[in-house]
Length: 236
Image 1 (cartoon, rainbow, N blue to C red):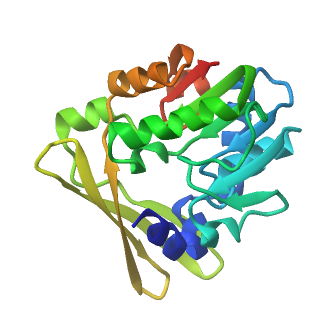
Image 2 (image 1 turned 90 degrees about the horizontal axis):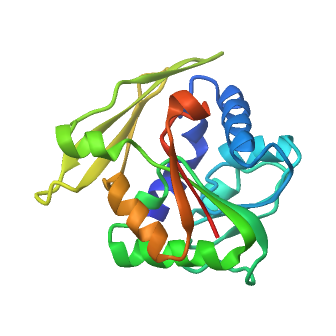
């Protein structure tokens, strides 16, 4: 389901942002600061169309991107990429200085077992003093309030406006939810793409990060980091 969601969305993914190029720059700068402001060997293990990977590469990092979706990878400009599941990364031990898994990608894995497998793989491909950077939605708040929709975002282009919003349908467990991502295009045609997430809390995620072997897990709020979601960093 996740691969199909992103393959279908790939051509219009940039329309989720008011200005994709500006988002690339801002997100790259925020992640660059969390990486210490120095070029690193970085794996973006859920790179999508390259929003974080391209921003980091522009700041001098050596970036490789992987993603489950070949359709999304086809849109990544000027970077080495490979189709891969984050639970089975196609790299030797200690290949990278940092692994980035941003923009709520990890919660597509719906069980602690699968998420643990992915985090163990991230740990494996990191070298000594490696850095993990994860970002998710604020799921502590979402688990408390169970929202049913997101505010619309508007993408302005020469051909007109594209409006994107999400409808959320919570499972009976109160932890997982199905998403309908809706895009209304300038000609008023509409597409709907569906996927599922686990609204994992910070404590639950931090526990899995620790179990995978990481140390010093630290949360960074958007007001502090300049990134649009809460970020968890940890070290090998």
